[in-house]
Image 1 (tube, rainbow, N blue to C red):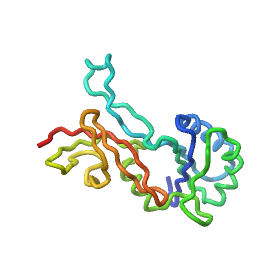
Image 2: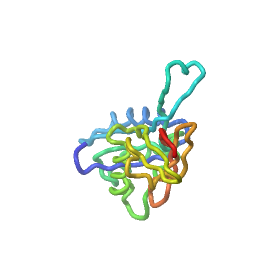
Image 3: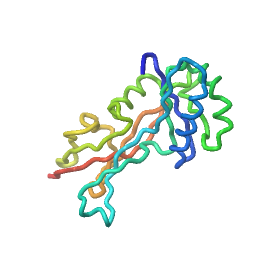
Image 4: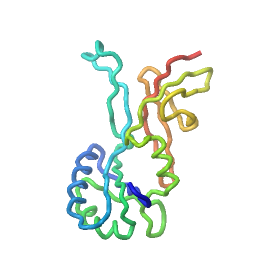
Length: 186
């Protein structure tokens, strides 16, 4: 997407993320403006081990990184965005509200927070699994989007191959679960 672009964040009913994305896609097709729109829900991989899938080996599937949040990437400025989508936001049964980072007219995710999210997503809209090892109490990630970001990890579950991280968003911390495979512990 061309610069400048913005990310707007909708707080939605958990489990309705895909439906909201489909509705937003239909709605933006009716907007007669020279702007680009891309609604999405950031995802993360998770280790899946079903009884039938044991022969297939390790399997990773995807789930929402932030359940209950839908993002809209667009080149449309805040004031015009509210004018174009205000009535849709308030009439939707699945959208609870449009998040605002603070006071004022700017409703877009701040640029530094957006860039941190883009670093984790690596342009794929999905946080892929990371691989690392533990020595004592110290985690070292050797591969994946969490490489060099070990300070974000707040909890590790080695058996189910995930880690909980804390992401700064709108001046607060939001917890997210990502795939982290610990290959060695010493």
